[in-house]
Amino acid sequence: MFNDAALWSLPAVAAFVGWFTNWLAIKMSFYPVRYFGIAPGLGWQGVIPRKAEKMAHICIDRTLQQFGDLAVVYNKLEPQRIVQHVLNQVTPRIDEYVDEIMYEVQPVLWDNLPLFVRQRIYRWAADQLPDRVEALVEDFGDDLSDLVDLKALLSRELKHHPDLMNRIFQQAGQVELKSVINKGAIIGGLLGAAMVPAWSEWPVLWALPIGGFFVGFITNWLAINLIFRPLNPKRIFFWRLQGLFLRRQEEISEVWSRLVAEELLTVEKVADAMVNGSEGARTRAIIQKHLRPLLDHSMVMKLSTQVAVGMTGYTDIKKAINQKAASATNEVFHDPTFNRERAPVVASVLSAQMKRLAPAEFQDILRPAFREEELSLMLVGGLFGALAGAGQMAFILV
Figure 1 (cartoon, rainbow, N blue to C red):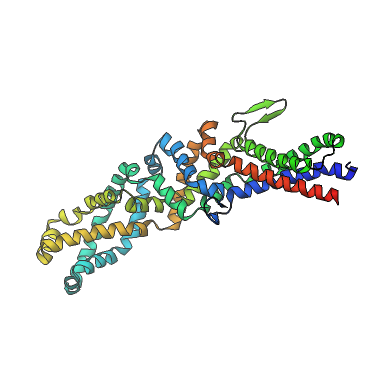
Figure 2 (figure 1 turned 120 degrees about the vertical axis):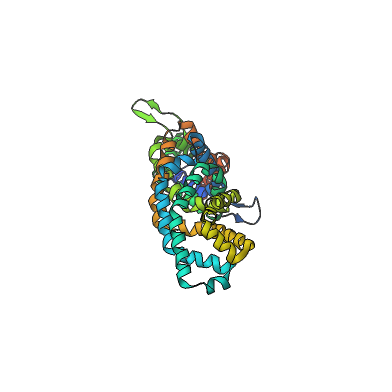
């Protein structure tokens, strides 16, 4: 027969089991960031880092690709500001870029040119630059959605930085995650209290680990469902019930969008994806189309260059100009201030589109991370609940 102290310890132990198993389930959702174990199947990786790529792809499908494309973001970024940024970055270094191109293809000729001739070429290049950049930026805007594979970009970033999605989830759902852990203690305590009258009549010690298993299993199941259920608001008496993440769709959309814009879809990373991604050859062809007139549309410059270096040398110079322009793209947009300034623009587009999602669509961005792992998380909760029950049984026996 249980003594009173042992009997009334049931709700306290169950409350601890509920709190701890929910805390553990949350931690297992985020950590470890990379797979840790002996072999595949004999280890663990946080649910969110493991499913980060899948969630990011769904996010893009549900937002940019459902309501528009990158052209929407591009127009919000104000192309003229991009043109001005490129000019601000390139113009002060135009002499350096010309020197690098000429020393690569015609070092002897360039060294032997009089200084005033080189200075004239520098000025000519600087004068040509604004029109070329403006036309280039406009052309990129028309084809941006075809030039950038957003899913490939996100996959690459998340592969190299698996902690990114963790930070997004932890900041976006900070309030909800704490609430889930605390509710675990309440639910566990209530389940423990429900066991008191039953076990006061049938004091079977081996039922403690079994009861602990069910407390851990059920609290984890309830915790996961509290995040996503009910899907739509339901009113019961004075309470309005809805999944914790769904209830705060607007706030979570803002945090999620801000972090995605600051960490994943930056101007620098999109520009890099254009040049070095799957459509890099097409991007370079567009660059070539707009830079070719630098030489071809100036008859004096074209003839002078062909006379000085021959047709082969002339072709080599044009190739070098294209290569330099492509390689300079990363330098031009590797500007933390510009990226930070433009991030809110990208975030506002994403946020507005996420807020427009129906609850079922919004849930589909977040739920896939957990759906395939729910049983594992609940079984782990049950296991630790059973261990706590076994510990309580041992305490009573002693």
